[in-house]
Image (cartoon, rainbow, N blue to C red):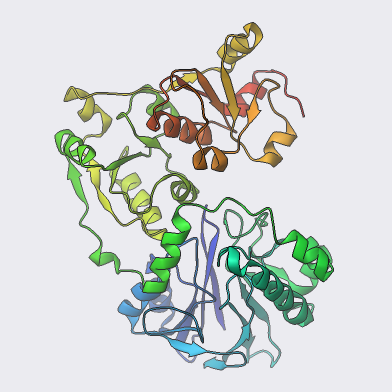
Length: 459
């Protein structure tokens, strides 16, 4: 058996290439939208991709099933009853598929979504016993899938389904069976996923706290406290139900002069500035949102920017532009009008309006706090980060909460924002600026700079 786990850094998406070099056939499970990795593997090892399996309709990333089918001719397989609008082959509990010496057996494991599956995988060249199970978004390493994405009206049913899938089906599998989920650290489909991307049934039974609950305790725990649902999720779900458009059909990307960018802004385009915090703070196009290019960029874009927005990117170079386009396409943000040719320098040289986001130093902030010369000071980190230590004068507003509901404050009053190292602080501050707040600062270097300066934190 040939088995390869493929990780999308930052988003925590995991897909799988499984095949038999001897039989020269393979399948892909939960493909990401940029499918070249699977094509390269099939060519390198001489295996033809014949099947594409989806463990469920994903909410956090656009599937590559259409892209892969168009390039390989492989058929798509989903659980029977899945309300997808494109043609697929329905599968059910107990269905078996062979790829040379490799055997795949379908398990129905609803709960994260109503039409979720897991897949038992056996390497017949070694044993007739299953070696591993692909658990989709039902069971993660150290966590389980969130059941709320199908809608509030289905939550009670989904929680009960999830309990049955975990406790009545997956927990009864062999203890030494390896567990390979569809997501790892960075995914928004769970609450606290491990950075490790593989486990075993036995280890999860012993150490996953969500597999140690009574049904009543499980229902209570899994009916509340879910991570903020990004703006992108509904759009991604609908895109995956309809069948994602092929990337070759996406709008043609073009370089834009400053005046062309200005014209697009006047028509309602959104400026996504992907430069680092200091560069954005120094000068930017007014109304820009600053989400620096990083592995987790797509998750934050999905929190801040409307999925239907017409996007213009500000980047440092062509490689960064291409990398950000990949991230945008993974979450279905295909309306990329183009990028500012010549960067922010070209914008300045054209004499167009510029904005600034003052980066306040830890020393300056310390003086402000001691003198009482400040109005509003927000810490946008997670609750866990806040509880590990924060600045006494700060008010805790987690970034997803701030993005969902801007503070009801006079637009001309000073606001200082901090986070861990400045990245999320700049997202929050640029978002506030775009919403009309005129006196916003971001703590340069965030809490890391404050602590390294030797200043006090409280718990």
